[in-house]
Length: 217
View 1: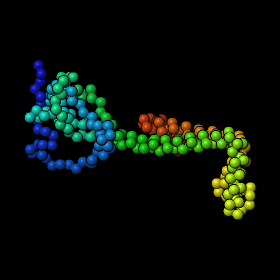
View 2: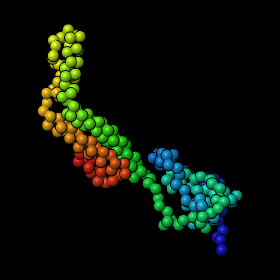
View 3: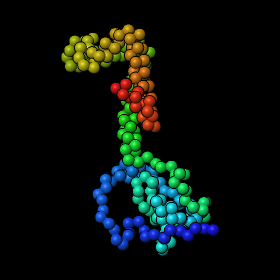
View 4: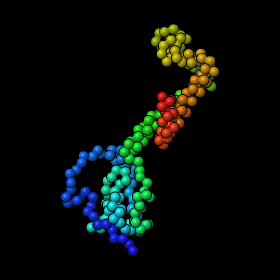
């Protein structure tokens, strides 16, 4: 025998509302619902019981109001044309989404994860550039010194010298031992790998990633 649905006023439409308490707007909950949609239950139920009023209500005019489990907003939806179940799930069957401080912490961790991913990309490019330079240094050395000569002659300076700024740094790189360049590339690659592992772990809110980030920092 189907239980008669609970006929209650629409949420927020009580004829004699009591004093309202000021409540902080659930900013992160609203953002998550905007990105991923509301979390509703009982949308596929044939009937609504009185004990389901916490998450879904059926008003006297037959309208159904569903409560979002994340942001607490009430949304009116029509009854399903082909219900998949008789009643909405019981409380023990409902998996609550993240909300409040845990949800805020997830957004903070993902923001840090994006920062780590940027570091990973920059360091990976630098490591690849160092490896390519170390491998092709012999072929690049003569063109480099020809360019330095052209620059020095163009500004009226002596030929064959790179004594300022980036040119001086490049001259040192060409003069460095091959083992030193490969070591620098390996260090950059290892650091890039560390940043990438941190980014993935923080994105999925893994506790080990938080400790790893703290130690690495």
